[in-house]
Amino acid sequence: MNTFLKTIFVALVALLVVACGGTSAKGTVSVASKDFAEQYILGEMYALLLEDAGFDVDRRGALGGTPILHESLLNDQLDIYPEYTGTGLLTVLGMDVMSDPSAVFDTVSDAYAEQFDLVWLAPAPMNNTQAIAMTADRASELGISTFSDLAAQAGDLVLVSPPEFVEREDGLPGLQAVYGGFEFANVLTVDPGLRYQTLNSGDADVTVAFGTDGELFAFGLTVLEDDKGMFPPYQVAPVVRQEVLDEYPEIADVLDTLAPLLTNDTMQELNNRVTGGGEEPEAVAKSFLEANNLLSE
Image 1 (spheres, rainbow, N blue to C red):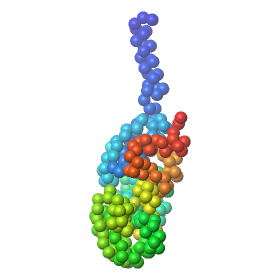
Image 2: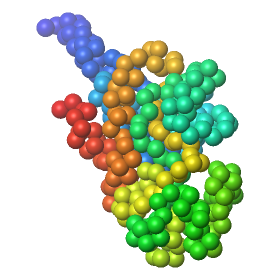
Image 3: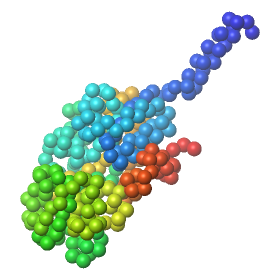
Image 4: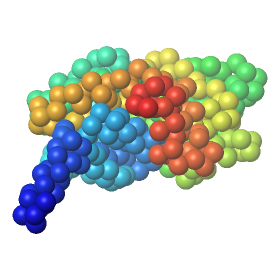
């Protein structure tokens, strides 16, 4: 083969490699998350599923809080991230609290589409709402299973919470307005990472929690029932730019397969593997998807 023909042959081979998988035929999508364990896990799950479906994924990592991620979507600097329906309702849209999960999802889905040209994919059944928890022994001893039960006995109990909870409208003032009572003997305000340590040491009887905290699983805590629906639901779902879905509609099918598997119990266990067990979020995400046969062999 002369030099000219050899050059042509090499060029054709290179073109075939590119066409057959050297780059993704489905293009590149960018995925990011907020900066805590659950979001790390979810963002990596989205990335792995999309890669398995043939996309190249630009992992942007943990970009920060809701305002940064939301603006990144609006500015076409990001394609997908996991968001919570309650956050969309209250933080992004500034609407009033609603307690029905379906109504909250429909409201944020419609408003995001109309105002931002963003799409909420299928929500998971998990609910990472604000919550209140006690040790199982203490809750049983006092006969407390609901917020109403707690409101009636709060005067004899100590609450541990992040500082903002005692001031926020959807925190202690809101509980007092909706339920009455909730006048604790003492409120210990600590860094969020110290809440469960304070509770388990016996220095507090009650802690502010979130519904999918890994510590709830690790310590077998009792989560009290919000019997008057004070806190809105915080179901998680991928939020995607409409332009991206128009170009790659299969993204919805790929990510929607994950949603039904993400229950509170499941997310508590996965979160605990990171926050309590020291596993890397990427490893936890991959092992979960493999265990549920969501990745190709």
